[in-house]
Length: 60
Picture 1 (cartoon, one colour):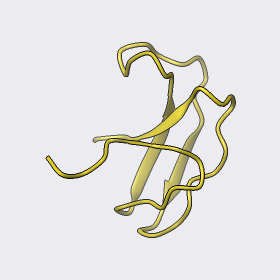
Picture 2 (tube, rainbow, N blue to C red; picture 1 turned 90 degrees about the vertical axis):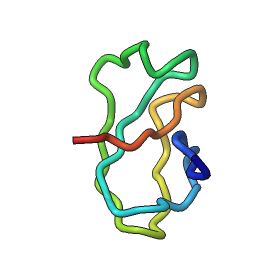
Picture 3 (cartoon, one colour; picture 1 turned 45 degrees about the vertical axis):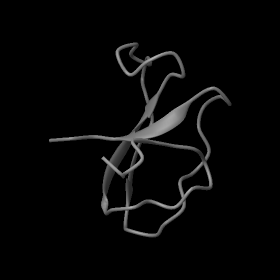
């Protein structure tokens, strides 16, 4: 599995898709009202609600 699964603001999206904000502890810990963003491949991730959060691809 060579693909990263968590991304920081400013990183570029590896693939087109919808990404959701996740907490730093674990992807099992939900974030209340997480931000979601749809990015095209190569677009930069926007800022998160706080500095401990990251972006994770939402799998359908």
